[in-house]
Image (spheres, protein in one colour):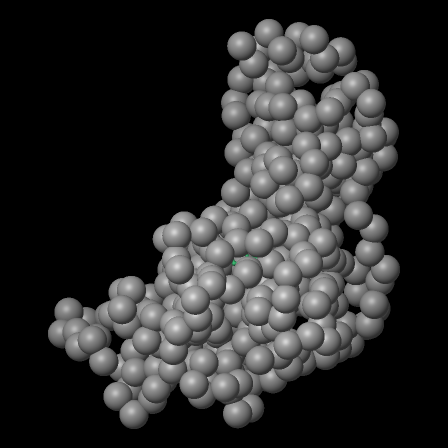
Length: 380
Ligand code: PMP
C-alpha cells in the first residue's frame, strides 16, 4: 500500500526498500565516540558487589550511589549547565520515571480535584501520556500551557531546549502560583550554547541524551526543596524500590570519562565528548539544511548563534530533532508523506500541533541519517 502511495509522488528515483525509523530519539549516533574510547569506559562489577538494596542510608535518596552523585555534580560544574549547590539529587530509571515522581511530589494527596498538568505546544509527546497513563486522581493532562485557562492549581512542564523544536523555553505561566518542572534533557553543549547554569526548583537530566546511554536507563533530578525531594524518592521506592546500582555505577563511569576528557591536561582532542557530539551534529544540520533548501518543500526552525560559556566562543544550536514543517500545499500530512519514502517520523499531532509538522530524529546512526538525506535530496 505504501509503495502504491509512493508512486503518486513525482521525482523519487532510488531504492526505497529499507525502512528508516527516525520516529524515536534513539541516541545511537554517539556510539563511535565510545568505541574509540575503548576500555577506559568499561565497567566490571564482581558478583559479590552491589547486592544490597541500599546505597546511602543517611541520604534521603537512600538508593543513590554516592559515586554517581559525585560524578553528576562534577560534570555540571565543568559544563556550567546547572546549579548543584544546596540541591538534592534524586536518581531515577531514566528521566521518565522522574517526571512521574515529580508529578506525584508536586500534586497533593489531599486535593479533591486532580491538578492540571500543562506544557506549551509543541510539547514533548510523552508528557500527555505520562500524566494520564495511570488515571491518577492526583493529576491529569490539561494540554497546551499557552491556551490553558484554569486556575493556579497547575503543574507546568517546561522542556528547554524543547523537544521537539529545539527552542530555549521559559515557563509560559511564569508569574503565577502554579508549580514547575524543568526538563533539561538537552541542555548540553553538543545541542545548544551554554548560556548560564540553570537554577530552577526541579531540573531533570538524563544520560540518554547527555552521553547517548539510553539503555542504561539513568536520569537524575536536581531538587531544591527537601520535602519535594523526599516525596520523589518515596515515589521511586513504591514504584521500583530504588534504581539499579549496576546502572548507576556504569553511568558514573561514563560521566567520569567525559569529565576527565576536559580536566586531565594530557588527553588528546579525540577524548572530548562534547566536541565530538557538536562536530557530528553540526555536519548533520548543515547537510539537512542544504537538502531542505534544495527541495523547497519544507522549512526548519532558525536559531541565532550565541556565546557558549562552555566552548568559550559563539556557537550554533544543533537540536537532537529536526522539526520539519510542510511548505507544500499538496502535502497536508507530513508523516504520511515521509512514510511513502519509507522514513518513519513522528506526527505533529502528537506534540499538540498539526500534521503539517513532523519530528525527525537527528541522533540515529550515520548510515540511517545518510539514507534520510539521500531520500529527501532526490525529491524534485
Ligand atoms: N524528556 C525529554 C524531553 C526527552 O526527550 C526524553 C527522551 N526522549 C526524556 C525526557 C526521557 O528520557 P529517559 O527516560 O530515557 O531518560
